[in-house]
Image (cartoon, rainbow, N blue to C red):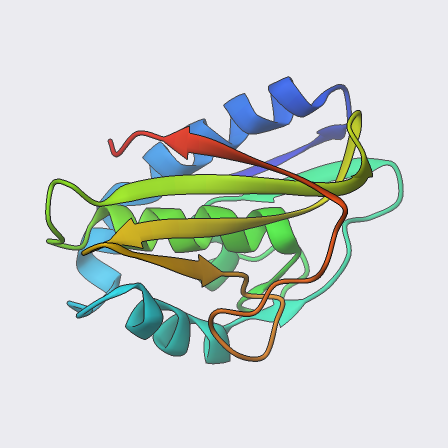
Length: 155
């Protein structure tokens, strides 16, 4: 499903992202391979994605099946950082990783009121993995002066 609406607030966008993640879980169970760790998730998912900004004035959130099969742009894998976060978390949540694994959305910006970028971090087996699928390699993050990590519970 595609959720396309005018941007209202960060809280509304985060709530909508949670719904999009939950909706994509059945697809991810069939589509995603078993991956050894979050780094492998990045390396498997990254080649399937193409970055494109949202249309002006619109917050576009695509579930994993929509992003891959029925994309808003008509190009499989095309979306922006929040679509990529939805894809990463949906795929991560169907992995059989230890129960102690923690999943985070990281909001980043230049001031405390406006986030301009978002990525996923996963604490797995005592190590923190940065999953920013807008970057070319796993573990990379851009230097924003303000970041906020939000714990996302597994569905």
